[in-house]
Amino acid sequence: MRLRDLQKEGVIERISDREDGRKGYYRLTKQGRDVVPVLTALIQYGVRYHANSVFEDEKPRELTTLFPGKQRFLLGRLEKFATEATEG
Image (cartoon, rainbow, N blue to C red; front, side, top):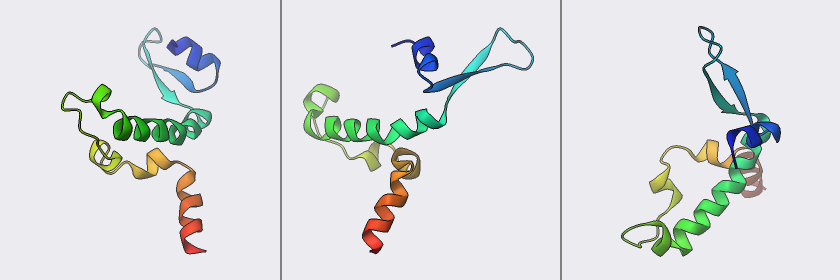
């Protein structure tokens, strides 16, 4: 999938450089941020159960090792859901 396709689907948006409109960068939209927990789950599955295909040493990893301090971003809106579930 190309950046243009992700933009068309509303996952990312292109922001033009203020000084040179030909240049720009991309950032996740709200829709893009909502898909992060889904991708996180797939990453977690892959690094745990398919480490032999993912890592040279073939050893499984935990997400906290791969993405230290990124729990809030990786969980997105699911963080609130998970917190409420443990409190109730």
